[in-house]
Image 1: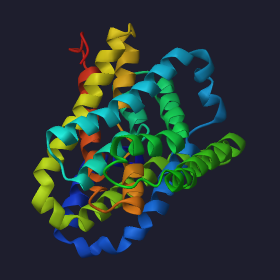
Image 2: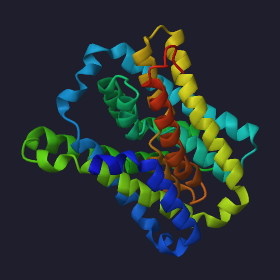
Image 3: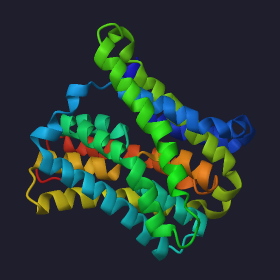
Image 4: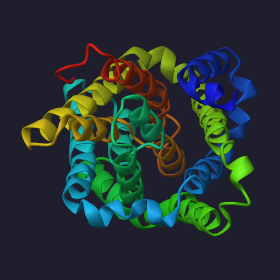
Length: 306
């Protein structure tokens, strides 16, 4: 039952987004809860991992470096170029770049499993990019949009440490030390993370009802293209550089799926609720596209890849 609930994440996200759009007052008062809620999601990620899950970094450093580099080079660049081409407002552009500069999303591990990719590699890439986020996310955001809007790099780094690194590390420590004792409840954390992310999305949709009516279609187009180019770029570059099909699928999923919850939390805290809109929409779309790709890649007709 819990696994089925988790697998239907895109559906719950769409349903609660519609509810939030129609009844914004039910969710908008919870704006200040976004940051602590994301901490819950990050703790849920950590509680499913053990310290020895990351020995792959030592065994396959080349592919880890490649995947992480593609994550942080491709996605913010794609976001910046799309924002210029589509002539997005500065606040939306800020949200797009911030989203692109975030680490890989936790849902990528589930999508990788469904796509018959390398789950161990996916988990390791997500963890490594998350560890680097406290430096790279603020730095890349400043690099691309620092001339247009003020970017509080130092404060943003501290926020990422508080809402990402500390909860993830705490979760890993608890699971490593007390894994057997919490085994009976550990499987509930992915569902808790899904419910929390859905609630965060609903809050952002509620806060941006008027903005969606004005700029919604253009933002949706930008988010759809951002995710699609991320998946395509991750897969294509992996194949060009000689990775096998399984690794190429894994890196495509890692590059194409962002920690959109983090972008939402940072956007609300340091920019505006409008800047958080791309992250909220991305949360829905990248799971829909990722699930569709996973279904295709896991089917018998998949012989050549993307």
